Length: 598
Image 1 (cartoon, rainbow, N blue to C red):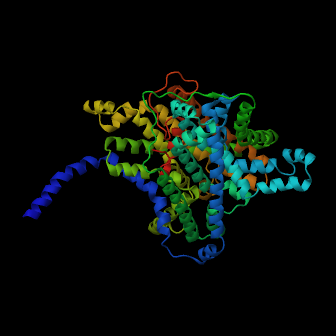
Image 2 (cartoon, rainbow, N blue to C red):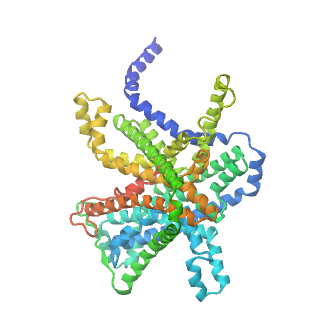
Image 3 (cartoon, helix red, strand yellow):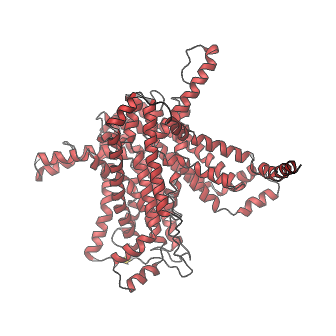
């Protein structure tokens, strides 16, 4: 009797709560998260499958090279982007020197350059027939000049190229953190006899540590995802190994195991970032907060600062774009044909559809959490961001495995009706490619949408529902109009990322289906570098759109924080990864790494 009463009491108490939380919004959210986690689950489950002779051969011969090269590449790029990003962020945020206003924006421009385009552009610029070799041969012997290009086409060269493209991640987030610091703390350090260098090293840098680590973590995730540049330079990494196992060796178990190794690399990176951050929160704002007063540099120091901030812009954007413009002028009459228009249509169509689906999924997930903020739903929301931290090649393999399984089951069911002439229905289709894009870049849309909802007062939702509007009507008539700018920004970020994505597209694209990215890369691999300039230049030009958006946020952020040009600072600021430009590129790309410092 007591047991029956206890069961009935528990059922009567918890069933209403369960019904309240298991709404259609919650169920749809869980379905989206399950689909997003499907590629990850397929890779992890594939580890327990039967190994092949090919895998044993790879493990005994080249696996150590993949691991060593990937680690060296990540370490080298991490250190170099740390130096460039933090140094330029400090100069721009706290010093006044000639050209600072222009360089504040110019230092973001390399974000528009895909790494594979940068790689083959520099390889051609430094080639025997390139412009640099002609100048160097005036001062150096031919053997020395030839060794410069040879040195570029190597692991150190890959470190150099990737660092030029990826340092803006560190620069943006760290610069935003420096602007949020109180000038009174640095002034107190100076009064106590600390030099400018000592104040930077002992005061400002420790306060900005969460932001710095967040930026470097984002950089390392991009490095582990890299395929085009390392393939062009002949550097063996996990991503090139996955391509070799899948395409050259045709061995699915080996590709899955290499993907799992790379996934372990990523998770170790995430755990390391979280371990160093712990529960720390750097809050140095108060009612007496005032922004850092820019220190005016004079004489040689001012011009050295200008030069230090100009070099990354010139090497990371001006030189490669200038060379692309020269090549485009040479080939544009022949290259601007119907095939190029189809390439652009394929690329823009894929990017647009993927962006719309990703933003819609992000809107559903965030709104579901807003309606029912349970711990389980919050956990599911964070899990949906896992895709961005997973390299594109791993996601591609993770998508192919379940899709091939489903295709085989469908063919078995349809065989009595259609015969044996039906090919694969899902694998190698545009639908599979779009699905993989959404898995990869959902986090890019999720975090801006989440930030946008946080700026909307919850009373608006409650008032709408009290007037009899269901959640869907409230979302459509109240929230979406207030989120138009945020949704457009999130869609733009996803659009550009899809347009530039290479490894995922190479693996999953349908037969004889090219995009601007795949066509540019293939032409470069075939030594038709000039012919690749037009699609590459279009990718770069579209990639400038987020830079323009970030530039607007920088201006808004300066006004809000009372930066060098602001007048009325806000009374409080935090030293994590703040909103604004840092939030757009950092928090929106947090992924599973939790890259946003808290």
